[in-house]
Length: 179
Image (cartoon, one colour):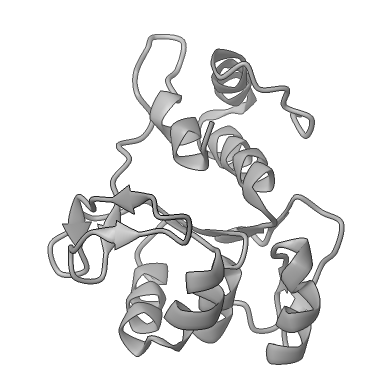
């Protein structure tokens, strides 16, 4: 079960969907993940609908390539001004840090990248041994399963803990950080 599935299956007691999940890439071209998985984006940076929650994914590409891509970093910085929640999973936090969004804030990332993040972004208060860090508007999470925890937390913040618990149960996910 991936992070986007948390948002995809979220619905309240009246079966009203909480989120419309879309995938966005810089150009709209196919995205190839490190493991060869191909993802066809729904939109690109210039034609996507208004967003309420943005999830910046991590992985090698985020940490080593996209954080150096000024177009991506600028787009994330601009989205930060309009989204209700700006979030990252794993090393997606490097893109948030590069955009200056984590300056003076607490944040986390994948455990293998914590030292690297501290060194690259000394103004970020890097937290260890946590699943996610909630700074209000900005929420960062550690690795993959931590992203699921963060997504359930976002559901709880936006729609209530009952809806989040219902979502976790629907997924057959043992929600350890539930309220």
